[in-house]
Image (tube, rainbow, N blue to C red; front, side, top):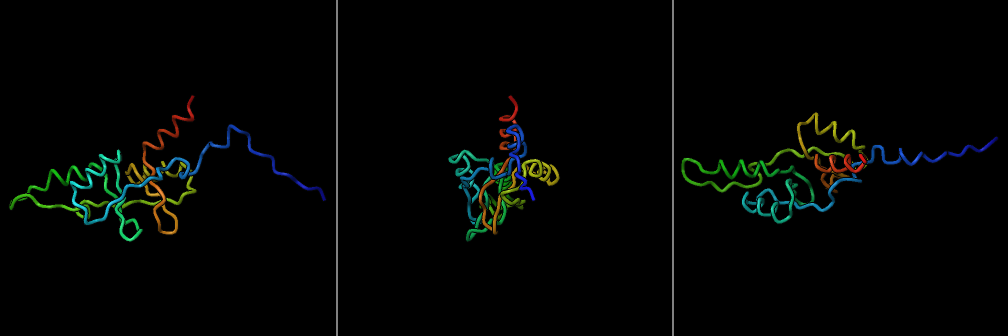
Length: 144
């Protein structure tokens, strides 16, 4: 019986469809659902991010995007004066993908769910965030 060896893939195919963990943002800036909208917006500016995972006890409850915060801040003037809105008031679901998900599946999921960001989660814990900008950067790096 002869031993069959697997031949390595040609170099041009190795990164053809990398997993999401290769391009995701690992440095997460998160907030508690009880965080005031103004505080969350200042965190976005300071961290130079457009999405904040909303986390309690290590679990991701959803996320807020800068547009959510701006809409909330613009709408907070009610008939009885200014309302103090919290992140929980503008929270959106955070679609999740596992870290090994190929980028083509990530892009298809963003399209299907009309979102520009997905949480990368393993065993219920957030590992990172992937945005449409991350996908564009990955694609741009492949085009020479």
